[in-house]
Length: 99
Length: 195
Image 1 (tube, chains in turn green, blue):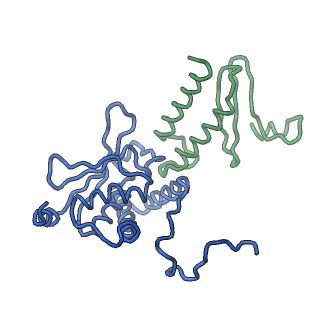
Image 2 (cartoon, rainbow over the protein chains, first blue to last red; image 1 turned 90 degrees about the horizontal axis):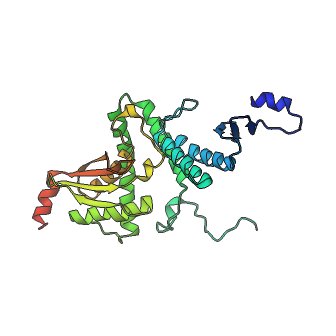
Image 3 (tube, helix red, strand yellow; image 1 turned 180 degrees about the vertical axis):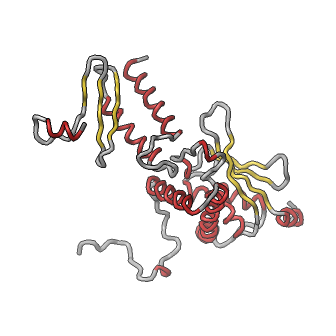
């Protein structure tokens, strides 16, 4: 998807899709320096998703990459990553929407 | 001249004074190195018990060296000869040097006379590690258990040291306990010394 969008893009210097807006959802994307992509699907119009994506990237480097039992390219089954991710999303939800 | 700093460069590493400060190491750097240590050992062994033993042996080497260094730096070349002395040495001084803080608690075992436990809410080496379910009770804290065993052995207190996860109610992550079981001779000597 990133490769296609890079070629299709009307502007020069495009590095891929950042945000995809649809009727019922928004798709935010974050690309790391190594090409690993993080996607977040959220309700349309949610703010500060890029901050959340950066936080998720940090959690990924901490709890997944430093885990000796994680094999690259495999689905992530790290308890710590899941735990912290859940907490980050909860905190995010409470702080932004007051719910 | 650019690059000439105030630090004197020693041509021979043996000439460097031992008291040369306590430098700090990046936690991430250590975490990656430790992760690689575990992964390397995983490729060399067939089962989990072997992996634990290898990590412990790695820690044993660290413990022996840390003991020598600390006795020189902190204690003025004296070493502990009493049981409680060596335990509190491990619990505070060794932990402070290795992990930047003293251990959470030191307890005497209730069931056996020769058992003591050092507990920690979360071992520094385990901070980023999630054990997969199929590895059962494996604990990378075996490395720390090896360090403790190295320190105790070097001081003349032979013991069997293991690391265990202890689930706590109300907390998601279990705390880690380092269980120290001293050899018979240690208790006999301690009794003789009037412990």
